[in-house]
Image (cartoon, rainbow, N blue to C red; front, side):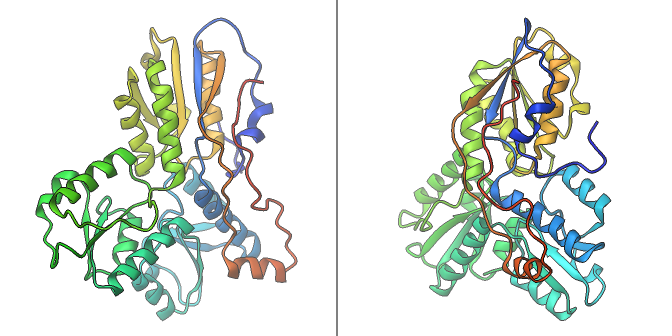
Length: 358
C-alpha cells in the first residue's frame, strides 16, 4: 500500500533503494524508459504542493490538476479542493488552473469573482493556444485534432470558437465544411497518438490539398517518447501493463499502441491492487510502462506485485533520455521568494531511466 503522504514527485531513481533484491529464476519484466511524469505534469503537481505550503489549505483547483486518480486523492488529503467550475469557489479565494489549460472565458469568470489565480497550464499546451489565436487572427479555418470533451481541447477551442472545428477521428473529416479550402490549418491536442494524428491529418490533406501545418509539432514530446518505448517493448512481451487512469488519453492510448505493436495482451490499471493473477498465467515476459501523469510510486508497487508472483528479473528498456523541465508560474515563484521559502525540489533536470534492478 502507498504511504499516507506519498512523494508525488519522486523520480524512478528515488525509489530504487526501496525495492527488494529478488533476482533469480522465473519470468522477467521489461520496464519502459521513459515513462510516467512528463515535465508539464511534474510542474503542475509541484504548483499545487507549493501553493499548499505557501498559503495553507484550502487551495482550490479547477478540474483535476492532472488526469490521475491517485494524485488527485493525495492532494485532496493535503487540502486541495477540486472543483468543476470557478463559480464553485468562494469569491476572493485562490484557484489553480490545471495542466490541461483553460479558455479565455474561464480566466474572465475567475476575474469576475476576484479569484487569485495560479496557472499551471503546461507550456506545450500554451503554445497550441497561441497558435490558435494567431491563425484565427489571420482568418484561417482551424481544424483541431483532438478528443471532444477533453479539458485541453475545450481550452484551445475557447481561444477562437468561431474559427475552430474539432475532429476526433479520421472518419469525421468528411463532415468538415470550410469557407476557403486554401486557408485551412490543423493543430492538435498534445496527448494524442502520433500514428492516429498522422492518419487524421492525411485524410484532411486529401480533402484540403492546401492544408497548412502548425509551425512545430503539437504532439507532446513525452507522449511520443512513451509510445516509442511501448512499440519497442511490445513485440517482446506476452502481457503489457500500463499504469494510468481511465480519463488519461495518453495512458489509454498506450494500451492500444501495445496491442498494435504486437503485445500478446495489454491491460491498464490505476494501481497494483487492480492487477489480476490470471492475466499472467503461462506468461514469461511482462512489459510495464505508465502514462505521463502517473507518479513513480505506482509503478514501483506494480513491480513489487509482479516480483512477488514469479517475475523477479527487471530489465530497463531505454529509448530516450528526457531532460526537459519547466519553471513554476512567475507569480508563484515571486511569492515563494518573498516569503523566503527555498525550493527544496528545484526544477533541475530529473534523473531519467529508473531502474528497479538493485
